[in-house]
Structures are given as structure tokens and as C-alpha cells.
Length: 473
Ligand SMILES: Cc1ncc(COP(=O)(O)O)c(C=O)c1O
Image: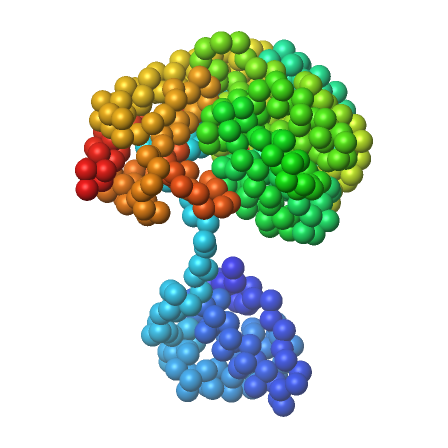
């Protein structure tokens, strides 16, 4: 920012005099006045001598002298005899409210039950740090310039192997793209696939962040109920609801936790092929399965129709902002073109560093290690809720993932869940907040990963007791 110091003799301020003002003195006065009032010239700052400033601005020295006098009579500068001219120290403080933006989206809470928390130990951070540093210090030509908008070839290659081995998805690295998070992937797909107002089937209840993303992309969200087998494809077809795309979390539905049955998966892909529609598969937490074999991703069944999206938010941590998309071949060109028109790709060296972690087994070992933590956190949560809530909260023990859905009994007033949440002092999202349409039966979406176990236990106690108290009237 512009400053002058005793040693500097000119203003660092880009000064442009307004030629519409009648004379040089008024032009200089106007520009300095604005700079002082806007705080660009700080209180107490010494202004250049009239001779120096006159030289700098290419105006007569007298014009500077009268501008300084005018500023002094405004009370904006103090002329100290023999010592120069200073921006006044008596400037009224700027009203803090005036310039401060109001931001609706805040930093999310990290209190117990907040989602988006993970267990990250120092060893993985050190490894990530040294890999990143190594890529930066050895960077040269190709890695220092704009690169392929699909992102790091090394990371795409590693992810392609990872998906084949752990998710049953055969994704050609040529058809993969690295993005800055699941929502960016969803947004890009919406931009490419949907005309304004075009309908998209959305799991009901479903992921609220995707609601926002699709809405802001101009899509019309069509709620389709989720039952014990996942998205009810036939009911949507039976109701004659057309759609150009559908967003699903088939491996572990958010927030109910059900996994989509094979027959539903087949119905959905058959529908998509017949309707020339696209399936966006958000496979956000499949690495964390606590028992039974991992389920194959939907993209393994219908790679021609499924846009597969995975993320490092759960496996590593949210601030990494790295996610990946495996695209059907027909969509690579339009989606990558849309991506290139944005920021091209996430920071290159971070992508390459994560590729190293995948290549040398660090990533897999980390996931295995944290899975044990999460299983323990899940068990503690389940046990504490059972004790404290009894049958006031109904839930299935999640076999996968990092959250649990605890349901309240039907028939309570609309505000019951938020009252209980408030009285328990917890951060849980509500089931009703994940719905597009109002419906009876609310509940709590309880994230259990990445929280201190004692704090988690205490919060589960408070939630259980608050629920009981509420139900007891
Ligand atoms: C359903 C679902 N999808 C995706 C994500 C991850 O999103 P992102 O990759 O944008 O961090 C989450 C994180 O909580 C989620 O719950």
C-alpha cells in the first residue's frame, strides 16, 4: 500500500489528477483528500515537501502549497512549522461496519458431530510436506507453466489404479480429471449437461451441499424418495418425472446410509440409457467400510453413463481441496473445456505429492490406520447413544462411512429436532435440512470422525438426554 516515510521523498500512490477540475491546486487537493479519507495515507504520515511532490506530479510548486493549505483547513493534515506536513492523527476512525462484508457462508464448526473432520496424524503430514517440497524444488519447464486442464498425469494414473483395485471402476487416466472438490465436479457437470431450469433427480433426503450447487447452476431439483434399497427409480419413472441427470450416493446414501441394491442399480442405468440422462455418482466415503466386502461402485456397472466423483476430503482432509472425476468418454471433451475456462486445475505440486503418497503405499496405510480410529469412534457413539437415549433415537449401526443418522419418532412438532439440538449444545445437521420437501420424521446427522473421543462421548450423552427430556415433555 502507498506510504511515504521520512526517507522517501515522493508518494508511492498512483496519482492521477482529475483534469475536469479547474486548476492544479484543486486537482492535487482532491486526490490527496480522497487518499486520506479512504485511509490510503495513514494518520501521522509525513507528506513529501511541496518541491518534491510538485516534481513528481509535474505541477507548479505553488499548487502543492495551496493544496496543503486547503487540506489543513479541512483538518486533514497538520502543518508543523519547519518540520513538514503530516496526515492528521485526529482522523475519525472508519466505521468498522461500513467496509466489512457480510458473509453468509461461515467457517464450519469443528465441534462434535460436525462433518468434514478427519483424523490426520503428523506422519502423513510430514510425508505430504516433504513430497510437496521435493516437487517444488525440482520443478522445471513443464511443471512451472499451464498444464493439462485434467490435472497431474501422475495423480490421474495413480487414481486409475486405485479405483480399479478398490472400487471396481476401470477409469482410463485420459478420461479422468482432478478438481478442487466434489462440488466443483458437480457444478462442471451441471454447466455442461443442463440447460437452465432443466430437471435433475435428487435423492430425498440428500446432500445439502449438492442442493446448493445444482440450484446455483440453475438446475431444477426433483426429489426422488430413498427407501431401504436406495433411490426409488420406479416411482420417479412411474410419476413420469423427466430428468437430464441424477445425483446419487449409491455406496452409502447421504444421509440415510443405505446402499443401493443391485436391482435398483440396474434400473437406474437402464433408465439413464433410455432417457439419454447422466448419472453423477458421488462415492465420497467408500474407503471406510468396517465389515463385509467393499461394494463395487456404480461406475463399475455402467461407465458409459456414470460420472464418477471421488474425493480426498474423507481419506485425507478437507482443506486439501482435491477430488477426482472419471468421465464417460463422450463427456471428456466438453467437461475438460469447461474446466479449462475456469482455474484449469488445483495447485500442481499438491497433486503430484498426493500421487507419491498413493504410489508408495503411504495413502493405503493411512486409510487403514484411520479406519481403526473411525470404527472406534463409531462404537463409542453407538454405545453412548444407546445408553443415554434408549429407544428415543432410532439408528442403524453404520457399516461404512463417517456419520450416523439418528432418527426421532414421527409425529413431533416441526421444531423438535432443532430444540433438542440447541438444548444439547451440539453441532449436528438435521435430517430435515437434508430434505427438499417437508416431511414427517426428523433426526440428527452425526459425524463421528476426527473428533476427540471424550468430547464425542460427552456430546452423545447430552444429545441422548436432551432427546429423552424433550420426549418426556
Ligand atoms: C455426500 C458428500 N459428498 C462429498 C463430500 C466431500 O465434498 P468435497 O470433496 O467437496 O470436500 C462430502 C463431505 O462431507 C459429503 O458428505
